[in-house]
Structures are given as structure tokens and as C-alpha cells.
Image (tube, rainbow, N blue to C red; front, top):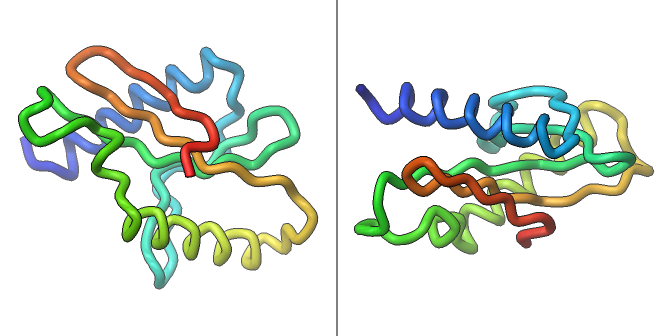
Length: 112
């Protein structure tokens, strides 16, 4: 299975988990010229941009370590594009990371 297919499969796993936590999924794989955000959702009145990272084991580090400063910067820029494109100037936003290690999923709210 290629990385893109694996990523899509685990984004679905994360989406299901987030729905169980009360998130309302708005879109998956939002793309713009600056990059991509895996999931966009609402958690109450807050618009949440969510990066999903999967690791089978810790051999390559934790899923959360993969969301480094460069990745965070890209996500912020794409989020700003999303807000501008959807004319959302007065909305609270948050950046979460859904990390999947093996079969265990953990969501860090306000991760960066």
C-alpha cells in the first residue's frame, strides 16, 4: 500500500474518532496553492485545522514529532488561505494534531 493510501485510511480513522469526541467535520484534504490541511472541523464555535500523523511504531519517532516547525508554518499559511477564501474574518481557530501510533489514537488540542 502506498503512503497516500495509508494516509487517507488513517485520516478516516481520525475523522471517526473526532466525530466521537464531538467534532463536526467540515472538509477533508483541503488544498490550496500553499499546501494542504488534512481535516477542517468545528469543535463548538471553534474552527479547527487538524493534522493527522500515523506511525506504525516509534522507530521513526512519534506522530507528534513529525509536525515540526516547518509543517506548522505551512498549516498556518494554508489555514489563513482557507479563512480568506471562505470570508471568515471573525472566527476563533485552533490547530490540533491527531496522532495515531499503531492502533492507538490521541488528539492534542491547541497543539501549536
